[in-house]
Image 1 (cartoon, rainbow, N blue to C red):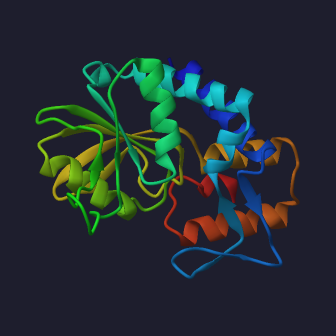
Image 2 (image 1 turned 90 degrees about the vertical axis):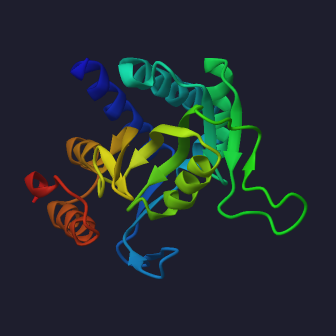
Length: 220
């Protein structure tokens, strides 16, 4: 099982780098939504444009979900607005499960709903997103599911920054995070393929450490 998961992580990291879903710029830094300047930028939404890679990542997701016995009882796949919706759609279709999606906030008109589709009380829900950083953007999704009586079994993402490695803690609960790759997998690829010089690797690792990303000491 460990070998399968490692293969998935390595191949996912390679795909994200090859398709420039993960980019680096040491001179002209990227501006994040928080306003912070960053030498790294991750956009997993790009993958939906590439049919072969998209199919491969969805199949990887299915394998990881099936490997986790606690997810055998899923009854609903819920995509987070907006980047999680395409991945949730693909997964729900493959798994033959109901699909829903969760808005970041309730609509201000009509029924003022936050959830589109149907999440029933006691549904076992998998929240799907493209990536997770500190996890705070997932709080509204979690609240929306729990408000209608759904039970969140896990959060699935293509890429996990690694600030929260295995679980997201929220309101006294530990919600499992299932991911295909993390920064350590990406760093292993860029080092093995000599994408950057050692001083640039050090800059990347130091920046990621400053964001609170764990388990990167071995790269310094």
